[in-house]
Structures are given as structure tokens and as C-alpha cells.
Image (cartoon, rainbow, N blue to C red; front, side):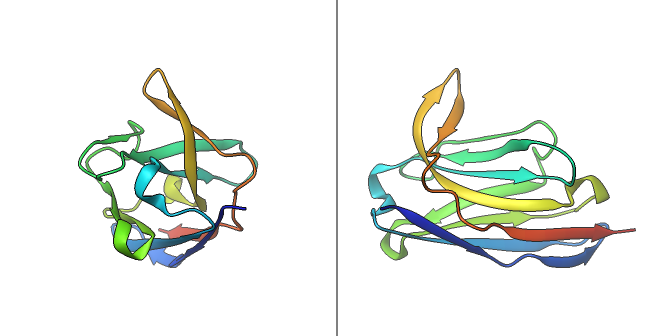
Length: 124
């Protein structure tokens, strides 16, 4: 059973930065695209970023493009999300996951591998 555990969330002021980490287990991530999603209070889960198996190919939601960077360390089975110039609308619980398949350039995450997520709160 593939599992992920996210960490690194917390309270940060607007304009600040935060680095989220995700450690995967059950499956080595080498052969998997990996993705970050987020869920804001009262809203559905939305796509944030995806990285291919090497980490050189990435894609981002328009709302975070130029501010967030996804990266991965396959040797450590780790995925990261560097978040810069944070805005209050970035407040959400952030989740990482394996990608089952790409559909029209967007990842379909594994529904059986969601972790608990890590909350990020951006204050004014």
C-alpha cells in the first residue's frame, strides 16, 4: 500500500515562504509522476503542481505559477514544494500523492494514497 506523509506547514505572513516536504513509502517514487494538491476551507481539492519522474518536467496551476516550485529526490523517496511570495488565498491543507495517469496535462492522483496533508495558513 502506497502511503505519503506531508510536513512543513504552518503559519506564515503574506509575502513569506514555506517549504513543504512529502515522504513516500510502499512504492519507490522513481517510476511515478508526483503531484501536490490543496484544499482551502469550504472548497474542493485542487491541483497545484506535478513533476515527471526525473523532476525536470513540471506543470503548475496558473494561480501558483512563478511562485511555487515542485522538486523531488528519488534517492530519498521525497517530494518538495517550495512556496514563495505567499498570499492569503494560498491558505489550505496541502497534499502530495502519486499520479495514476496524466489526463490532458493534469494529474489523476491515486485515490487510495491520500495522506493527512499539512496545513498552511497565510496571514495578512
